[in-house]
Image (cartoon, rainbow, N blue to C red):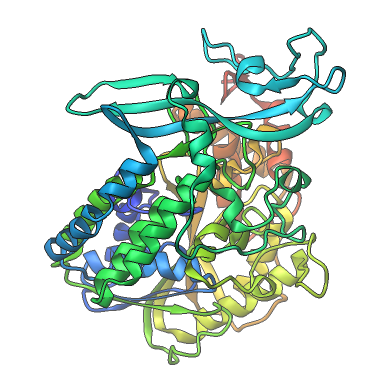
Length: 567
C-alpha cells in the first residue's frame, strides 16, 4: 500500500474512551482490508486502546491484541467486547437510578444541580502574609486572560507562583443546570455555601490510595507541596465519594460482560472526574497532555453527569459492534514474548509502538490502573527512561533498541510467509529513527514503502512539550514491512548527500498545499524518502530539517515556499 492514509477523530470509537494516543479506526480499516481477507488473523502486540481490534472486528477479521499495560488491556477489552446494548442500557439505568439521593446530596442545589465547580489555588504573600486567591489576582474576568505575575491586595508584587507559599485549593465558581431548562446558571460558590460542605464528605466505600512517588517521570516537587502523595489526592473529596460509590455498585453487577462494560464507562470518566482539567474561560479543555500537573485553576465535574454522557456514547458504540462479523482476543503481556502465538499463525500485523521517550505510559495510566488495582511493570516498558534508577529499570536508547529488536523478532516469527506488517512510528530525533531501523533489520524485515498516517490533528505523541519549544514531530509514518532478508543488525546503509534532500524538499514543496508545507510535514517527507531509499536517517533530525528549510526555502506563516526567484 503506497498511498497515504487518512482517518478522522470524530467517530464514536474515537470518543468512547480516552487514551494517550489512538490510530483512527477508519484508517486502520483501510490497511486491514488491503492486506487481509475476511477471517484472517490480525495481530497488534502494542495494542494500546485496541483500535486495531475494533477495525478487525468491524471488517470480519480475528484480532489478537496484547499490551504490557493493565489499563491498555482493560480499555482494549472494553472496546472490542460484544455487549448486548439494550441489556447494557437497562442495567446501567437501574444502577444510576439508585444514585439519585447521593447525587442530590453531593451536587444538588435548589432548582438544579451543579455540573462543574471551578477551583482556585490560594497562596500566602511572601511580604505581608496576606492570602492571594489566584482566581482574583490573576484572572481578567472581562476577557478571560490569565496573568503570569501576581500581586496581593496590599499591592506587594509582582510575584511568580513559585515565589509564594501555596496554602490550599478552594472552590470559586459553579456551573449549574436548572431543572427543566436548557440554560445554565454560573455563580460564585460563596452564594451557596458549597465550599465548606464539599470538604466534609464522608467516603463510605473503598477507593485506591496508590503512592505517587518521586521516581516517576511525571512526578514534580509541586505535587508534594500541594499534598499530592497518592492517587486519591488527584480528586476532590466530593468526587472521590461519588466515584467510590459508583465503583462499589458496579462491582455488585452479576453478569460479567455487563460489569466489565460498566467499568469501561467508569474508567472513561475517571480522568475527567479528577483535578487534572485546566480551567478555560470559554469551555472546559482536556487534561494536560503528558503531565500529571494540576493547574492553579481547575474543574471539578459532576461525576454522575460524566458517567451518563460516557454511558450514552459507549452504548452507541456497542450497538455498532453487536452484530459485527469479526472477533478479538486481548492478552496482558510484553511484545517481546508472544508465547501464546504460534509460528506463522498471523496474516497481518499492525502496531503503533512507543516512540522512544515521547510518552511515559505507566505514569499516564496511573489513575486508571489505581482503580483497576494493577500497575504496569515499569522496568519492562519499551521506552527510554533515564530518570529511573538501575534498580527500578532505568533504560537508555540502546536498551530501547534491544527491546524493539526483540519485539520485531517476535513479529517476524509469528507472521506467515508472504504476509505483511505495518509499523506506525515517528520521532523528531534521528538517533531514535536509527534505532527503530536497526530493530526492523535485526528481525529480517525490510521496508517496502512508507506512507503518512494523517490523523486529522497532532497526536499526544506529537504535541509533547510543544509549549517548551521542543522540536517534535506532529505526523506519523506507517512503514509497510515484508520478510525477505536474513536477520541481522549489520545491514549496510548509504549516507545520503545533502543535495538529495534539498531536491526532495523543493519538489515536495512545489506540489503540496500550504497545510502540508509546515516543518513537521517536511520532516515526515524526509524520513519517508530515507526509508524508501534504504538510507540512514543519521543527521536528519527535526531541527536539522528545519535548519535546511530556512536555508533553501522561504517561510510565510507556518508554511514553507519556494524562493520567489526560483524557477
